[in-house]
Length: 82
Image 1 (cartoon, rainbow, N blue to C red):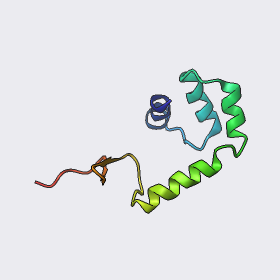
Image 2: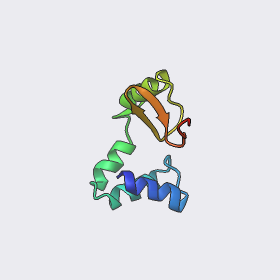
Image 3: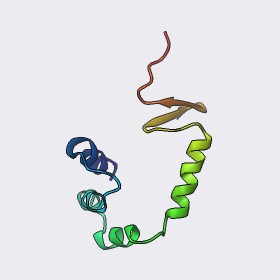
Image 4: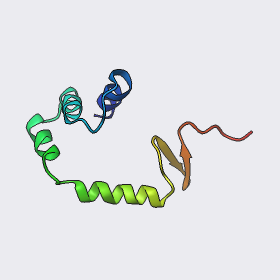
């Protein structure tokens, strides 16, 4: 799913808030489309998503991708100091 989403976003310029793009990525990833549609039409995972967002924000994460190594947050584009 991750690869399908990244391809849709970076290679095809699709928004990750566009349900058609999300469903297309789900199809490429081999997910059950009926279930994916049902999830998108509901608030089934809303609390979990908001909680994870709040945790990331509290940890100082404001963009993706980001890595956490030994508790230190390192943005993917960061270059180590010499």
